[in-house]
Image 1 (tube, rainbow, N blue to C red):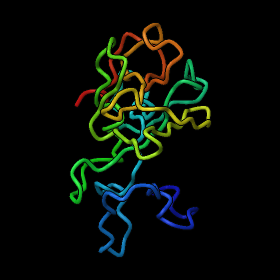
Image 2: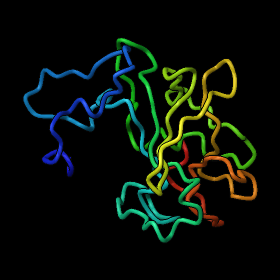
Image 3: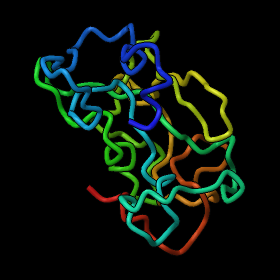
Image 4: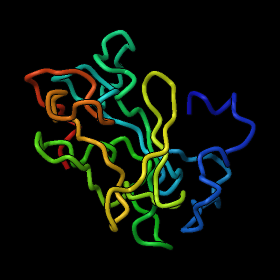
Length: 173
């Protein structure tokens, strides 16, 4: 809602390549928290410092990130069961599979977004965007979850903002 006055159109929240389902526009007031409002998901781990509740919304400064060029800030999502909106676009779903430190793929059902030549666009904390090819026939982009340390993820995209022994509260489903 904070950036809404600066936007020319709410269509910026919708991927033009997504034909699944559009959000319910019956309300005169925009409802960004409504499931299905956007085709994108935000990395919850960037919403708060480690060990704090992601809902606090304090945010993480760019200088606190250990690898801003590898840390995914937001990414494509989709509606799991068209025509019924799911929780895509919520802060929760970008970090749902993040508890594992060994899983190389964050294969989260509503983050599967292979509508761009069998790949997905990832936006990183440093501001650059990169297309990532799906790693297998299921269509999931190859990136690591919030609790996979950099020693595990290496130079691959990750939802993990900095190494710490604390678990991100927003990482569990």
